[in-house]
Length: 344
View 1: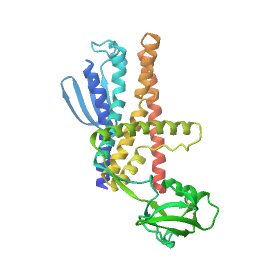
View 2: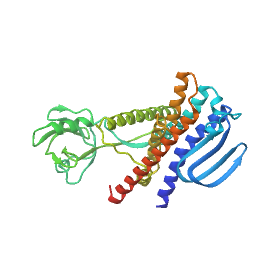
View 3: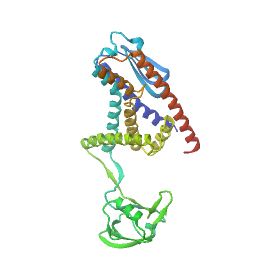
View 4: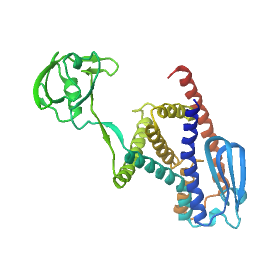
């Protein structure tokens, strides 16, 4: 339990602090005055001041914020007023949090590719494991056997096996198998698995250990981060049109998920952290009031209209958005707790 809590705290640190540091460093670099840097929300547990900025750690670790002079209505007109800076600088400052989340994700994925990991070899039809008592076990198939043909049809990749088994109407299948350089035929009787809703013979592909040099690992880290972005956008689109079930997880659900991944080792945990970092970075770019994307939306409107949107009205919209987001977060957390209690 203690180890799980440590992993969860570490996760929120690597998700939230880089995001806020992105806003902080870019704002400083652009010459803006940063009044406060906070990790967490709610009652403040620890506060100190260095230079012009107050730093704090708050009770609830599910968020954070950077307060830049001039962003709020009562700060309007100050010497370092955020709205006096060029539009491109303000867009850069607001976008920097999500950029940092993507950078963290790329670093974590690159690290995983450098360290190396085991993965299933789907490019070849070579058996890795055979389930005890399965049709494959009864047919005397062995780990390391390569399936060359099924009912005379050539098998090139692992997915071909599943395809031929699923679409065959025969009770017994004739497999051409290569074992230690010898080729022979085996008859196997597939069984229907009600959980998978398909016919199986009880085999899994072999595992390979994959590791890349740093240059290739970084390129693959970038590729993985943007493939995830594409997948998330398609999933959200599917949920909006009803093709994909709307399943949203809050902090409690994430904590449970992280706890399970932590039990499997550091690499699965880092993979989950990288995935969540992409989610956080992308979500914050959505044009939703109170999120970075909501502020970017108003900045883009300013660019189109050629004049600043009324700050008081904009902050009121963000305030309403914040209240709605808190309500949704509480609702999602309640559903997470119900799933937890129900064992789902």
